[in-house]
Image 1 (cartoon, rainbow, N blue to C red):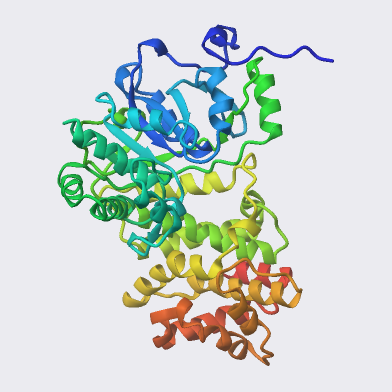
Image 2: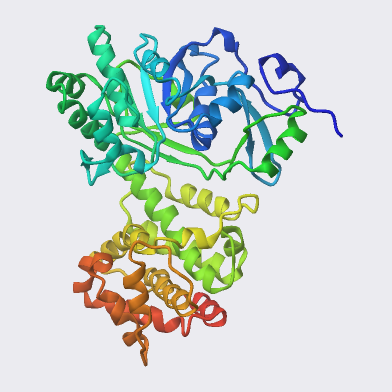
Length: 489
């Protein structure tokens, strides 16, 4: 039986091989200035890395990570003094040990410790990665009927939800005469800071209108956008980590080399000098969101449906396919960039080149069938805005309609093969897919009845004609027909 490896910790950092990067600062000299709610893999592979890059010069911004549900991350990292390994996935993997997390708490088991940390005078920033569900929203506002919110409002001093903890911390600070902190959402949802601000104010108003007014006036909720593919940690990663470090790490993380973080400049008590670590500080978060949605997410969906019809499994395989790889590049450069309003100073050619390089990275196994899920939600926001702007400018939309037509072929093929669709409109889509048709117009017509999907475009004959023509170009949706259509495009 092989001898167990020593555990990664402050005491064993010196044992790391020379090729593994490690904190270039005295961790003992750092102080916790940030509380992060939702300390999952993405935060530890993304925001915590940016903080790790500034702690040598700004030691007041170390992180207290809070798990709102499970104790697993705390139990994994506490014996490691908060240290963990990050693998950057590329042709030549790179390893780095991150030291920005100084404390990990489990809220259900250490609620009072979390609240005291939030109320600490040293804490100036609260960040969140709790997924869209964690905000308990109903549209743009707080869902007051959400079970978590109902529960927290019944006992605001002992919260369970992210909103409950943010407001409980602010309530303690208000009572103790401390200034309000900045609350920064790092989840990708439109107007994330605005939604979070409205939710916190609405929540506080239910039991303390004066507190709500103070939060509305004193706290800050900047918007942000994040981007980096972060595959889940698995046993294979743990094995690679042990081999690279020569130490046992209970929970390493991995991500692609590319990373992006755009943050609005709106902070109550200062902020780290993130720009030195590559963060973009901008007032136009919506512009960056739009660029990501149109130039990254839309080609992702295009590859998902066209690639699946071609019999491919991953994004990297799709990029390596001669016809689909060329089509994806042409779709982005020739048809999306000219039809999207980009932020001032945005380098579109460099952004497109970076995305294409990311797509082609074989070390990141991003499955097309996963991206293909929830098409009725993704297609309208990823492609229809670009199509609408192209129509308004009287530009051609035939190439832009090809991925939409591929989605319809995908839905029809899955349905007729008896494979359940993963989509909120699965039943309606399956019903449309089962309609027998003699030609492309007849096949497309049942889908166009889904007003929730096609909305305003239904009134534009140019779109309907282009979609039918694109559907026809894909023939029966076979690999041969799709390859031929892509080559022609």
